[in-house]
Image (tube, rainbow, N blue to C red; front, side):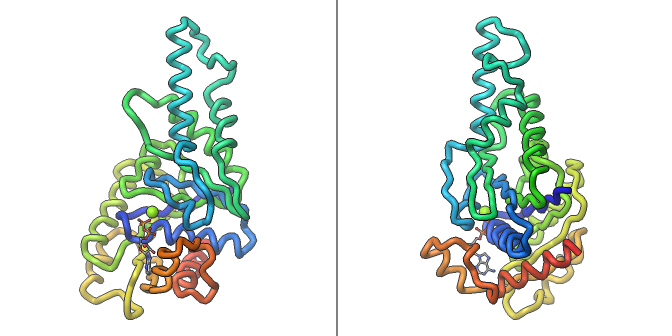
Amino acid sequence: MTTTIAVAGKGGTGKTTVCAMIIRYLTRQGFGPVLAIDADPSSNLNLVLGLPLNEQETVGHIREEMLAQVQADSSAGIMSGGLVSGLTKPDYFDYHIRSIMVEGDNVDLVAMGRPEGPGCYCPANNAMRLVLDRLSNQYQFVVMDNEAGLEHLSRRTTRNVEHLLVVTDPGQRGIIAARRVVELVKELNIEVGQTYLVINRVAGGEVPALLQPFVASIGAPLLGIIPEDKTLLAFELSGQPLLELGDESPVYQAVAQMMRQVLE
Ligand SMILES: Nc1ncnc2c1ncn2[C@@H]1O[C@H](COP(=O)(O)OP(=O)(O)O)[C@@H](O)[C@H]1O
Ligand SMILES: [Mg+2]
């Protein structure tokens, strides 16, 4: 059984940081290798994981190349339903996805790239989904870093999600954006087992009283808060991967506690 944990929320709230901490927790618990899916088109999950990434090597690029081939085939009068290579679309993805996967120590990374360009991509999306599902099934845990619009989830190019963590900063705008994400999941019928709210960068150890009514109105339980931690700035400045944060890091501790709760 594969468990997929997705992280979403407004830009800059700490989604990628939370993903890194989740992956750190899972690998420390011996659940690795973990499959990390970077579903934010401004992909940078690789940086916090300390992995290289070729920006031209995303699932989106494979799809573009496949569609170009389909077009070339049909203008050449080949109407086999497959590709010139003799491969079906899922087989084509399967073959190429291995080449874009970045393998790290206990974590493998796949970047989705841009959700979609012009044109009808439904069959291509189905193929993508099928292949990502097949790939994910080989892992105990999949961790997905999403952008605010949940494009990949809404287009069903990625698999269903067991746990969705919506991250916000401790401000009204962040929380309103988080509520929007929670609503979006319902509107788009995205299959999510459980949605939680996570408030990041909280000073003083508790949710400010002024924010509490907003938190209560979200429609998703508060999983936990993560303290503001100045240590992260040093990591950002030096480019040191966040995976290397120590066990004593309050940010790591907070996320580890959340994971224990989620996976209970
Ligand atoms: N708890 C925290 N304490 C201090 N800085 C943080 C914390 N969480 C995130 N940051 C910083 O905030 C910035 C945005 O975080 P990031 O995880 O990239 O957000 P997102 O992926 O949502 O855009 C980064 O510079 C990160 O180091
Ligand atoms: Mg990010």
